[in-house]
Length: 362
Image 1 (tube, rainbow, N blue to C red):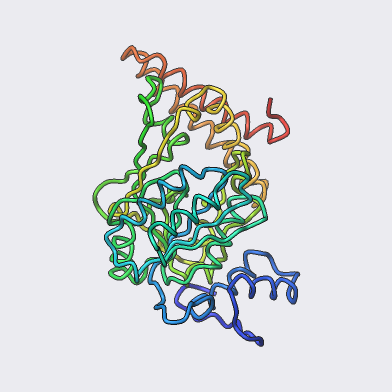
Image 2: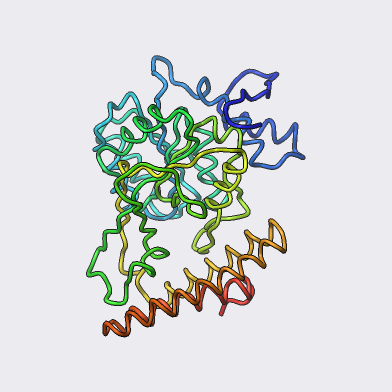
C-alpha cells in the first residue's frame, strides 16, 4: 500500500485499546511480522482508549524511558511548558522495565500538577523499539512525535509540527533541530563530527526542505503522520538500543521503508529539542562503546537487507576514512590535536564494529 491509500484491514471484534488489538491480531495472525501487526492496530487508535468526555488530541508525543527518573521528570516539565493548548496534545510515556523510581516520580508529577493529558504505560519487552512501538500503539493523535527521556522540548515543539503537517499535506514524516546542552564544560576534544554520535546534533538550516538523499531525522526529534506508520509499519525490534546495549539503526531502517513507499521526509527547523549530555557520556569508554556499537548496528542493518548492501556500506566507510583523515589533518594544522585524535578514534571504532560485529567487542 502506498501513501494516500486507505488501509483495507477490517476488524471483526469490538474495538478496545490499540495494544489489546495488537495482541489479538498477533494471536490470530501470528505469521505476520510484528511491525505489520502493530500497523493494523494503529488505524484504530482514534476511537480506542478514549476517556469519556475527552476530545481526541491532534498530536501525541511518545517518550520511552528506562531508569532515568530524574531526567524523565525534566522532559515532562518541558512538555508541560509547551505553548499549544493542552486539549490538542497528549504525552504517552512508556516505562520500559525500569527498576528505579520511574513510576513513582511520574505519578507524583501528574498528581501535583493535576495533568490530564499525560499517561504512563508499562512495556515489559526490553528495547527502545519495543517501547516506542507500544507508545505508538497507545497514542491517539493524527501526528505522532517521538522524543527521548533525556531531552527538553522547545515551547513551540508540538505546535510547530502541527503547523508544518497542516501546510504540507504530502509530507509523510519530519524531523527537527537537536541542540546539545552539556551539564558541564564541553570537552576540548569534541568537534562537530564527534558530537553527532554523542549528542545527536542536527541542524540543516533555517529553511524547510526535504531531507537530502542519505540523510534522515535523528531519533530524538522525529514526527510521523499516523497514516504513514499504517502504511510502512513501525520500528523493527531487531534494531535499536536494548537496556544499556548501545545498538542503533531502527530509525534509519524505518525511514528507508517510508521512502520505498514514496513517502517524503522533511527537515523542519521550528520544533527544536535540547539534548542533555551528562559527564558519563563524555568518558573514553563510553565513546568507544557508542561508536563500536554504531558500527555493529550498521553491519546488522545492511546484512539484514543483503550482502551487497553490506559490501556497499564497507565501501562508503573507505570514503569516510578519507574524509576523516583530511579533517584530522586540518585540526592538526590548527593545533587542535585532541579533536584530530578523537575523530580518528571514532572512525576506528565504527570500522571495527562493521567488520567484527557484536561478538568482536572487547
